[in-house]
Amino acid sequence: MERLNAAYASGDISEDAYPGLLDAVFSATTLGDVAPVVGALPGEVTYQVPAVIDTGNQRPGELAQARAASPMLGIAIAAGVVLAVIVLLTLVWFLF
Image (cartoon, rainbow, N blue to C red; front, side, top):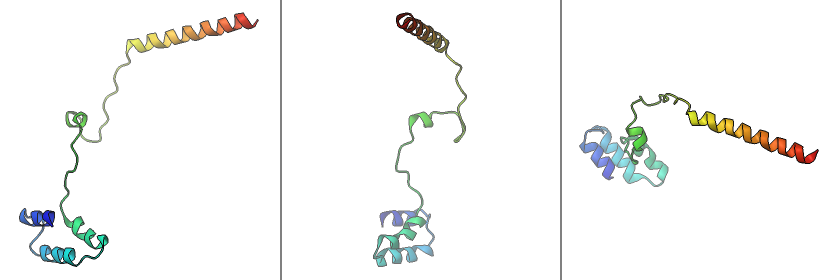
């Protein structure tokens, strides 16, 4: 009722629609009977926008530009390959 009254007071619900919505609320016997009234109400923000989205400079739905690869990534891959070769050579040495 509070949201319905507030929507009417702010002009979001017309003078013609307000009595019908009130009747629907007061005559409702199930939750489904109230659904059309809730659908007529304006949306309400029930969450806070995450700071990451709030401070972004892209339009909604646009993807961010990919970052350049870090030089450390290349070094880590090379070190992994060298370590794998050493492990394989060690296994071959002990097995044969």
